[in-house]
Length: 141
Image (tube, rainbow, N blue to C red; front, top):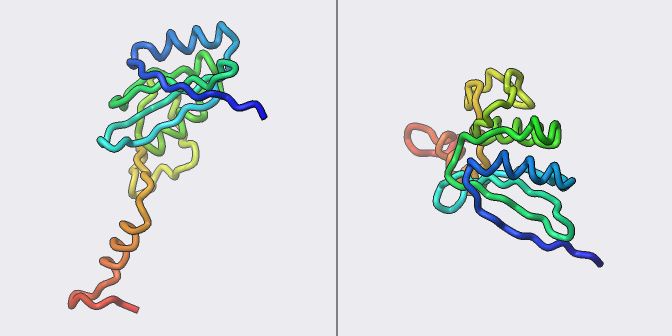
């Protein structure tokens, strides 16, 4: 069994485009672009490249506006960038977001912008139980 190594490398947002250009020129594949909200509440965006035998994961932390690498990696970049724009509200400069990827434009929660965040089940249950209570505090059936 051949396992790849995983290597995390923190970079600044100014390094995103030059890095993508170097990776493309070297023939390295863009594996995926990911994002999460870390324990400190900051956005952590990562660009993962296949640099055999390693997956090099380049992270930019605390930024919500970063350059798009769509001109360099085409659909391999634009699809995940559009997804992260809708789900996290991250702005990828130069990315065409004139049409939504999958969220409705008139969705009340987003009003045409991102920020559909995953909520822990316990929070959802508490929120829904609170909404289902009568003014007297009783749960409605």
